[in-house]
Length: 370
Image 1: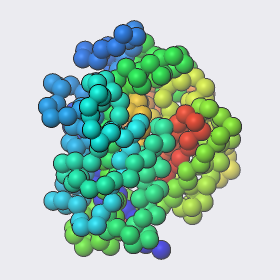
Image 2 (image 1 turned 90 degrees about the vertical axis):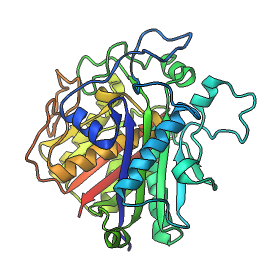
Image 3 (image 1 turned 180 degrees about the vertical axis):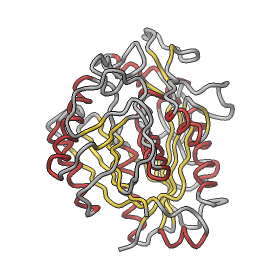
Image 4 (image 1 turned 90 degrees about the horizontal axis):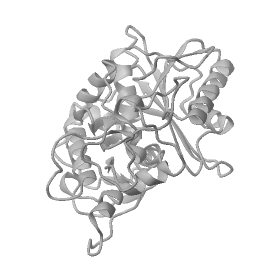
């Protein structure tokens, strides 16, 4: 079976453009969450958010600009000047932009999309919306496309911008925190929304190596599950089932690091921690480090999986486990370690990335360092 790797990663976050800026901010325990400076909505009540600094980009919606900045970085990281002929583009987001923007107001433009343009070309693209697990669902589809030989490369890309619609949808269910999110902290109060863009280049490992690109991050295992019995991602059994399936797909029984979905909600974080404890007990794992990036830049919703993958890739390559920013009083745990500071000197081979979303969308990715 063909080995599929992630040869390029691109990000735009509240820390600025680039995966390096994100990884550095995370390692240094910096928090980019504060009261909104640019975002305006009739219902906005002063929640902490992760805004991308700078003026609103010209030439289209902000989420489009954030995505294209991330795509440019991902292609450069993969040593590509453009997409190889026949490549597939998979966009993730809330809903596609219509063919004409007539009658679509500015707020709606920041809610819908993004669309294929710029370095992604102007052809058709697949569009995936699986709530906050969208990126990992897209990676799963990308792996199948590549294994089937139907494309030489796949780009998964998307963007998000703070907008009244997604803000209101989380505010109405009282999921938002006035203070910056503190995943896994006993005093956590909820989610902080963020904005930005993300992109991944996936391809056959041999093809990447022949071009001189990085081929050390293998998509070793994946599981995407729909748990229709639960409306939100707070079901311990659904989470552990998904993680178990991803590990079986990868053929591994040990993990060296787990990048959690953890957004800072009481029920969601507790369920994920309990599921991780179950997985550790089943496989004889002790002191498994687990952290989340959402206390640093906020929740990027559909594209949050790219930030999670970027954090995990850096951990695998450097042996440094990132902290959970904002964590001061960790939940009690037995086999799982919840670091509040960066942990250096680890030997990491296999890591899991969790992404869960409303509507019972659950996904787990196993990345292996080759």
